[in-house]
Image (cartoon, rainbow, N blue to C red; front, side):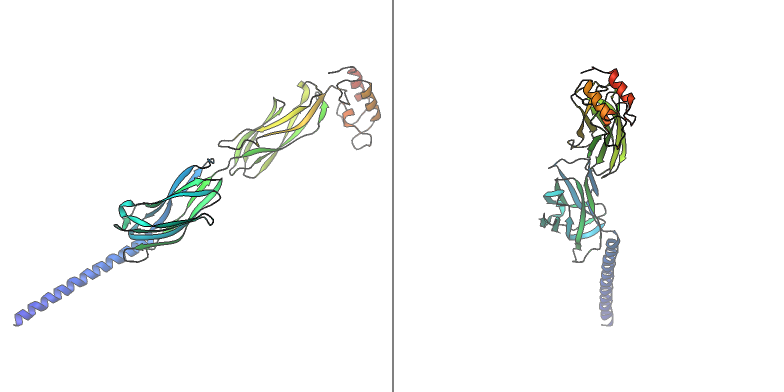
Amino acid sequence: MERKKLSVDKKVIILITTLCVGILSTTITLMSLKAFQSSNAKLSVEPPSIVYETLVKGQRFSVNATVANVTNLKSIKFELSFNTMMLDVVGIAFLAEEHLPSGYCKVDDFLGTIWMNITYEGEPITTVNPVALASIKFKMMDYGESPLQFHSTTLVDSFGNSILHETIDGLVVIILHDVAIVDVVPSTNETYVGRIVNVTVVAKNFGDVAENFTVKIYHNDTLFGTFNVKNLNSGENITIIFNWNTIDVTPSKTPYKVKVEAEAVPYEANLTNNVYFDGDVIIKIVGDINGDGTVDINDLVIWDSAFNSKSGDINWNPQADINGDGIIDKEDGMLIIQNYKSSL
């Protein structure tokens, strides 16, 4: 009887020891998993950034919500915010199909949020490498930047425990490239052939990034100047002064049109503001003060009434200063005489 009792006690001790070891082992395993997840679980937007150089309205693209370095993931909840002025959600799909995802989602187009609640009816997800949990398809609507930011994220394991994790947001950028000519002002609207007309031009970068481009200036369709703009920052403008030497221009009673063009930069879609027409400039025969196309007695009369005047005087007439030296004197009269009876 003694020996039998001793044998039974021994079996009980072995059984208790085995159970303790098993429980301890399970506890250590769970603690290890918790420690592993606390420092490594990651919920991310993939790819982390998407950049489009131009807007194609209606074009579709997709991003994924992914998880990595996680063990025993059974369910997940999160919100993802986006820019509703720029993007529109057109489709959502739950992924990791081998884990049998089920759940529901809600899109708020006013607030710009996507809310998801996913449960895995199959095997929980255990992974080191990124696994896509959901695919979100967007439609482009406008230029701009749209952060894709996680909010109110919850990861839960099959025991109902929260999994500590970090989130990595995403960014979508659709770049606006848009350079323009915003002002053109000639120094005069009439002058004599051979004189210089200064044309002040203002170019502006309405786009999102610094641009390099060439500005060209024409009278009618004849190019007479170019300027290379370097690294003009977003929102900034630049003032350029072109000197138009009219020595080779044919005098005419019909005004010459000044046209300025900013050459299109790569990916620029809006070209309507790249060309600017302004400044009807009449190029006259030397001595034709009144601009009627003939140098005659009428021009001498006008010259005489402004004789000996300079800028600021009450009788000053800049068109009577034919040689452009700032004073109306006999030298201007001589130019009228030299070209007398000339006409277009």
